[in-house]
Image 1 (cartoon, rainbow over the protein chains, first blue to last red):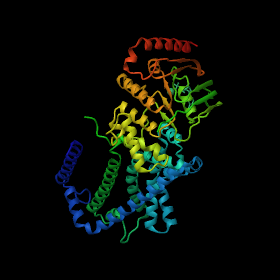
Image 2: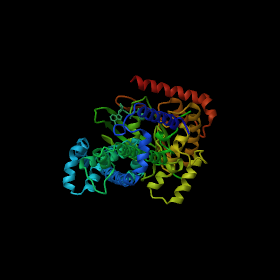
Image 3: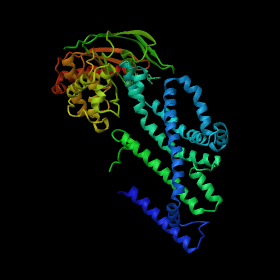
Image 4: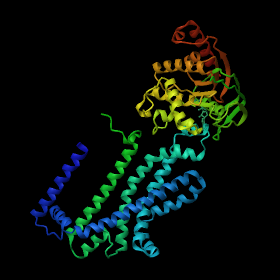
Length: 258
Length: 250
Ligand SMILES: Nc1ncnc2c1ncn2[C@@H]1O[C@H](COP(=O)(O)OP(=O)(O)O)[C@@H](O)[C@H]1O
Ligand SMILES: [Mg+2]
């Protein structure tokens, strides 16, 4: 255990304790602001309702992220191989990126004509750009002299890509993945808010909306806590992946000098 | 197997960059098979440009270069070690063989030998960041030599190293050259280094880059550390310095 874990942990415990104390001291009713203990209890008591929703949101997020990795990565490679393709397509990738997802979500829901699919498309739309742009940057940031070396030995485009450009782009790609993981979750949640679907296959966003209508504020907070926890878990997983892949060689994964 | 060096003929080479910089003008140079030649000149006089043109990595605006070598028979050592940071020292040295389609087992063996040849036996599994500057440069040299090139082009390979490492690498490079007899073209801006290493020193001047003189260094090989303190060495250095001074004043 080091300071990086202990310090925020202590702060977290202090804030939760102060929160709980304030709720009690000022007798704040739970439908305005529930204390952390009540939220934890709700999490347990409503688990049978929240767990399936957590699973739905998680599944959409991970599917969108996987699609973002595949499409973003492949497009980046394609762009790096052909300047013309990049010049033609990149502006549209930017347009997709800068258009707010809440604004296109209704359109996508109409077109896709299937709630799950439209949520997936929305989450994918916000998640794929960081992977695309970071990977492009990585594929381009190859040492000029290493490129010359590959040319000297007659490596050709394909083998230069496989043995030089892809490994060089890996740290950038992983940086994009970390951002995209968070964005995929945001996309999944926002899209569900816009779609406002009910039924038995609804995700955490719908649980928050539903709990709001019913003034079940503790459940709202419980769902919110699950969304945050999911985001943190995705972030930690991508950080761990990045560490495992880069620790032998990349500066970003080295321990700070003593 | 003994490797014979390849001759190089440079005929009237000029190079103008897109931004209008005239990097080289009318360079003509004959390098004999197995010769050790240094290109000496101030920073910016076009040494790197000329070396890249000789390697075939850049095109000349005018003139021609003849070098009867096949693919993989030219080795190039850059000013920086230029290693792939994600690959071990051994994998870095294996690269040229891998690109030439040599099988895994043979590749391993030859790369291991090349590493041992530059005094790095036992460091095959180290990553570049775990090696010192001098060791990385040795890996880079091993990589250039692993294909047993007939022509070895080096672009100020030791400029960034401390003097102790540089002296040691100079001596080791000469030993390798004497064993293998490849043709060596060595770019440097150090008079002392060029005299220690080469049979012939080609002095260049800047703006536009051109050859102002070529000087023979008669001292016989093997040249050991003692050569650095000999009167012969000092005299040669004085002579080359004078020519370099003229070139820079020109
Ligand atoms: N890619 C390039 N584009 C434009 N100018 C260049 C380029 N490379 C080198 N030059 C210019 O050409 C001249 C010679 O450069 P270079 O061959 O690197 O010299 P040296 O290796 O002797 O220091 C310099 O003035 C440099 O600024
Ligand atoms: Mg240079």
